[in-house]
Image (cartoon, rainbow, N blue to C red; front, top):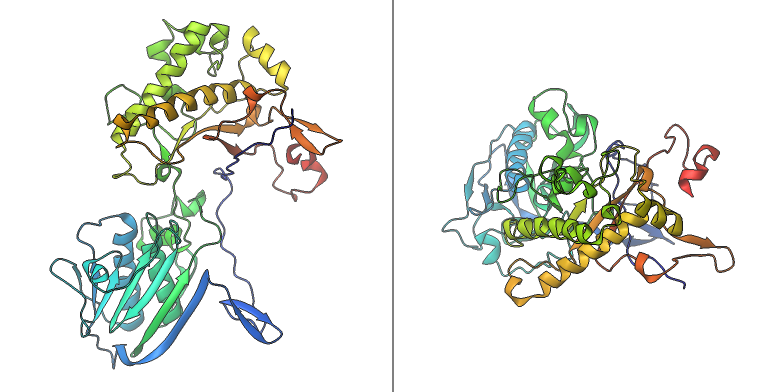
Length: 444
């Protein structure tokens, strides 16, 4: 029976550093989009509209403006947005802007504020922003009367990105490397602009990556801020629910990548349930060696760990954590017990065993979330993920040359609606292009 894979989420693993590219624009093209036949085409996701007003943010080296942040938002994004605005504005102008929280403040036509995030100023301004459209990292910059509002995406890093957009538009700020960035200096005057800026990233998930973006060479301020300035500051842990090493201990969170030993620690289960593990002990056995009773215990144990974490990391306190990763251990071995071998040979790929396990796991989680008694902890479109990686990279589907589609041998191998593949391609030769003959096998 022909079946398509319903859902595939592709996240790039560590090892490929996040890069920022700058391209030269033709003379007749501006940063908002481009031109067609001499008519400017504005990209609504990158609209940097700003027109002059008669007022000033900085005049003759003096400013009456104050930065305002929400008293109830001490997130990294908002905190760094405030610090970066103060730091880089002072470097460019010599003026250190004061800051305060939004307690007892409301919008007024005479107030002179640079408001970051969902402050009381914003809530009383009459402005209305669709934060869902901005996703996590999107930006809106809006002028209302004499106040400029910097508004980020619903739950992400947009507050900080909004400040970088503002500094780029106002002071030509552009970061290139750790202590290598462009910024105007000796600025004495900055006119208040009527901002109506929308900037929504084309790539919604830009991971920290590796190297200096994640691990700066020194602890110097510019080094530490480089990853944020590259807007590559998203972590897997922001989105993936963490299992815990010990039952009932919220202080023992495990990893979000290779975490199978966190879900089913050997020192806790090996003695009573050796079937949970491959014969070599290097990987989980996702069939429990063919023992149906032990298999049910294995699925239920991981299920209960997910429920425990769902109760601890509530949608209210951690709104972005919308997936759980069952990550194979980082080695090339796969279980070759008789039960696994039978399934692998039937479906044509090692990944068939873990896919079936995740399907059963997802069924239990979705049933639990559907219970009204658990509504407080339920998450919309919550996913169970596993690695398509290493020895589990190959998908258990066969390509039909006649139909030019991939087909499954039966319904049992089709991923559930809430089972998602974390594609982690290994084996590519990064010294040549993806289309090079050296990469044909892995590419296919």
